[in-house]
Length: 318
Figure (cartoon, rainbow, N blue to C red):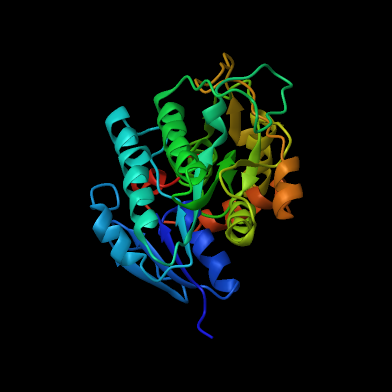
């Protein structure tokens, strides 16, 4: 009996690489599709294809033997509205069309975002039936993409689900994100160049990237279709606390870090906390990696990371 086959769109990005690794460990033959290659992953074949501009037929040919298709592509907060629209809406539309034409009917797991719900009052544990009211171009375009997948599943065109992922950290975190950027700055902090740091007064749900990858692997074989499922730590952590956990992991002396006054809220809202009970019930998934461990591994991986910030951020998007 042949191994199961999986195609990961955005497979060389921050989250996509971890998904590829998790699927190979479960016996999948994995094809990673992306615009540019990255450091090879054992057991993963790379196909250079820009899914943002590729026609549905090209995507269908690449996925013709797949049992599973994962969409881990997307633009980050830092992208402009045109690039976010292209990667979050037409790409998903063509991907759904491609998957719907395949005789093998592969399962489609699409990575959405908790920001699709929009800002919520502090203290809110966001359930999957919470109204969606996104306020930013990133969140609005991500929501349209998720609705395309869910609508196609409801119509019986595809077998698929959406994982609405919270903020992601861990080894390989892109420099364009807050924690990835902080690690980059800490690498350059010295007595002659101390670090000045301004922190937002936010509390956010952060999840380790390896837990996200495990959720994708479980969603691949879970009898869940036409549903959005939250994936997160299930707790809101202070951004100040996370920053100082990373500073502690770096072993940069605290007296070389100066926290500036005038903290502000970020544009995406001041609070995120996902209710993850549905993921536990339907997929048997729960987070395993503590944030302290995640940030320690982020720091350790940043020592050898040489990926450009813009390229890394393109496939983060969470």
